[in-house]
Length: 517
Ligand code: NAD
Image (tube, rainbow, N blue to C red):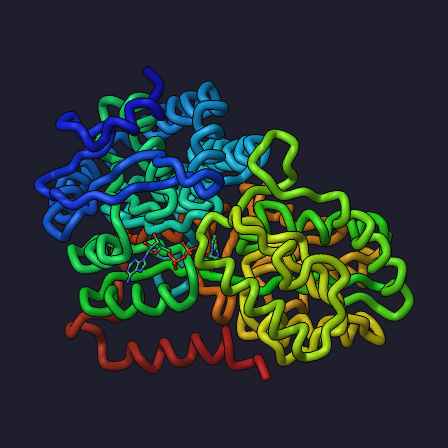
């Protein structure tokens, strides 16, 4: 029996793959495309979350004691397990989130690659090393290492139910922590599958990665129990609540929040490539991508050609649930109203609708949103300032790339973005000055597939980093140790130091540093 089939038995006394604890309340996860029940899961209360974290705390000690090599071996077994069962997991993602099977495969591929990188680079990034003791402690040896925090709580969203949480889970585990994961209430089956797969692949450390299911209150319980760090991915509004709850227990937080990412298309850009990337960046996954492109600023020189190329491509897209569909339904039905409001607001403000719009064709009853391209949307409107999280794109004509950059930077968000230009120097300069945590040049979203690169935002897009060396360090505390190798004849940090020692020290400092003006 596959793991996905076992999940469906969760209502029975065997409780499927999720430990119910003493909770009696349950909730259903349903397929957005059909409304069919995917699985029934416990609503874990604070007691259940507490029991889970207590088990994780004991597991964390054993997991940390394995050392880098022992953990690497087990994380490799997990990665192998996921890679061998990609289609089973992708099918579950397709059913529960609605995205096409092929997109789910892509998402799982990225997650597996991050698992490999995190496990393979943990020792080099975090392991004990000697550092220079400097002039003042030349008689000491100085050591630095990055120690695990203990238990890391991970609260995840539904839009990339494998890739996004794995950015925290893989790096926290590789750093030596146990993890308790609370998946979104819209994708609990995927979260439960990931934890069940861990138990199957790593039976000797099964409790190092556990899952709790439920709504926001279950996530909030993780803050209160508390854990040693809370890695939150979701909307800025919920992030603020999570931070407030974590403040009560002084639990440190990592915030991966929403975005309003922009693409700049410069005079010398490859317009066809930019249009292709913009359409993928905006419409893939039904636009439900935190680092999706929601705004394009194209210069006078390329604007008309760019709009034509985007329009031609968008007309070939077809949302649906079958194997030929380019993207699926909106995972969360309430988001449909947000998208409709943004489009209606833009229309009312004088925007030109190239494709999509607000009529019934654009928002069919089955929960799809037609690909929507909007021109001349005022910069103050919701479609430009707020996260839309749907298959929409605004395209705005600007004088030059400088104006494009200024407008791109003019939102409260700062997650990622893209620059299209034939000039490497020009593109690098624009990318550096883009107010965002990540920027890709002549492509979209690429940074997410480079495990060595940190991932995270600025402003309302959050703080802290997953992925890369920064992502490993995020789930550790730096530990500093000095060891005296030889005593000095004069010990300055002793009440027994000679009276003239401070004068001698001041003279030496004058010689070493005093010449700098
Ligand atoms: P959300 O904020 O509604 O929910 C996220 C998670 O928080 C869910 O698991 C939810 O149950 C939980 N939650 C809700 N209330 C809580 C509370 N009071 N305390 C603790 N937990 C609580 O977000 P969503 O709709 O699931 O996801 C979409 C959002 O996530 C978008 O804004 C998107 O941009 C963002 N996102 C960001 C990244 C990133 O890496 N920056 C990645 C993916 C998604």
